[in-house]
Length: 73
Length: 131
Image 1 (tube, each protein chain N blue to C red):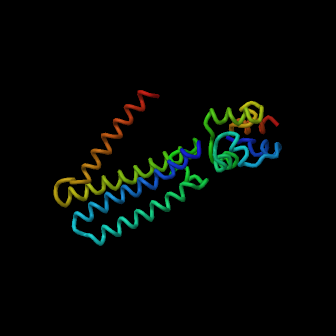
Image 2: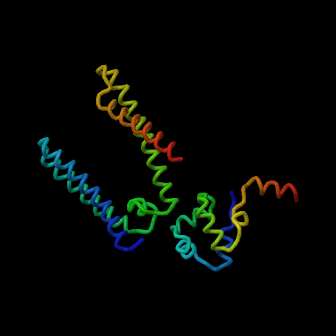
Image 3: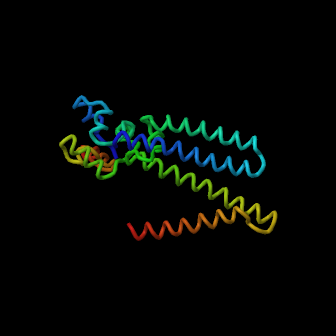
């Protein structure tokens, strides 16, 4: 699963530490999510989506969906 | 988490090490190895002090030491515990086999195997009922 957390965070000009505090997790966890090493739980994914005022599927995309989109292009 | 709670959890990891080390030191003292007992106590106290300051940090290990952490850190702790349990199980089973070959009985390793097997079964049944 790919995600746009880093992209959205940078667009808001936030540091990982500030976003982490807002989400109630550690900075390392935000870093791991951005790097794709850790897949957040549904509640945390919802919290991330709520923070960026967007839908979960706009932030997290399954690899298979990305492949399909590429093929369609 | 309130600062006082974080502080008490930080102290808890140091206390567990110190009390555990104290118990081991008392047992060593009773066995007659007084010098070793003092050494064990000293080593565990130093470990307790290190754990106290380490648990005060912001890293993953600190969070696990404080037994709080976020969902990822709890997952790290759970997975590390599972890997450790696998290593201990392998050691206990191998020890039992060696003990049986030597004396015909699994001895203490057998007790560890039974505890592991029973606790695993109980945990599996409980978790299946809850999920």
